Length: 369
Length: 208
Image: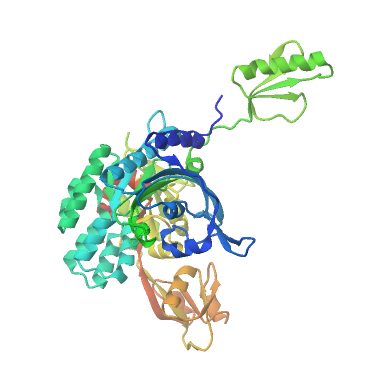
């Protein structure tokens, strides 16, 4: 009998995966002080937060994000390796209403070196593959991708060609849409040279291997970042991993690799993550951090629905007026239950649940209807 | 088997012109020209399927993955801000979003400006950029009627040749932005059909 839905099955498999790598489960309260989110508002993907007054008058918020709370609780001098499976409260992109959204994620806060970064990317990669394999495979075949970008690379290129702070938001917005013409126009409007604008615009169209990145390299810093990307992609050793600079996160919080995971069958990214050391710096902590979140609501929303049945078998009875008759009906139903079927017993003539098989039981023998 | 590329085309002249660009680029589908009530047209050999949708719905079909790519006016992208890749400007369907009003219109800065439009977002952004206080009247069609009947001071709408405005004794007061047709792609589809979409982008952007 299949009890778990595909997303529940995925959650259990991922929990096992994260535990195997030494990540502990992090449970937390659903509330946080509203002022805390105001301070780090730009870190959040949503600007709408459900707030309410506590009994003492203080303003609280239903959590729109988990990473901020984990980062707040991380202690300097320790490595925090945690995963969570919680609900967050955000405005749904589709219906523009608040929704409770199930989210799973992994965070590594402390001394995040290149090894730790590789480990997190491995977990992100395997998580996306697990979702593709469990919920979106067709005839055993599935497709997914993990795309990696690097805020340091983008930032180095913008600085090299003198893009001003005020123009960066426009450049990043166009970059996020793969709108090369928009990137070029924003750079030119900012007084960047045509050569520089062209090179920055080329980031928008880039979708490939780190090997093709050398034409965009401008400094020792970008050379070192290409080496970092070479290490992480080689470690993952998968042709489904690509470098793509349309993945852009807020530079004031993200400072290194950023990545997104896609599964064929889901029209949006199902995973999003990156290095967010700048957030910890803003919190006054001398630590680095990397992590990712999985949007589990997308799995049920987009997987192909199977035909739904309320039960496998309905056992119909006509007469249940004596102990012997009730006992016989129960025994007939239990026979199927013991064989792993979901069984509903119903009186003949009543409204029946949708079932794969209906069996009529006259007290002695069963007849398939 | 070749992966099928699903294309959402806007109903009307722009869509027909866009289809011709696809056909010239080798992604033709002759059945689309037949006069029938079919909704989806497929050419398995060319690996492409087309469907016609309302122009303002193209971005919705693409954003939610029902179409891998689509052709859409920049006005729709600015108005609805869909989460899609804006791959290139196709340089066709050129027109502009403009503020228009009666020929004798004179703005009185002492009170809010009444604006009729179907582009609420574009209108809000434009007037907030120049710091003008406005009241928006959201309409879905025949926008030009609003100032003629005295319901609003001005309109914000698409202006192609300006004939409708002239015939109704209205004129352009300010151009807000130029508009043209763009090739957009679903962010996930792009990852799984990169080569096909990139080839198509190259072919389509070659055209004038």
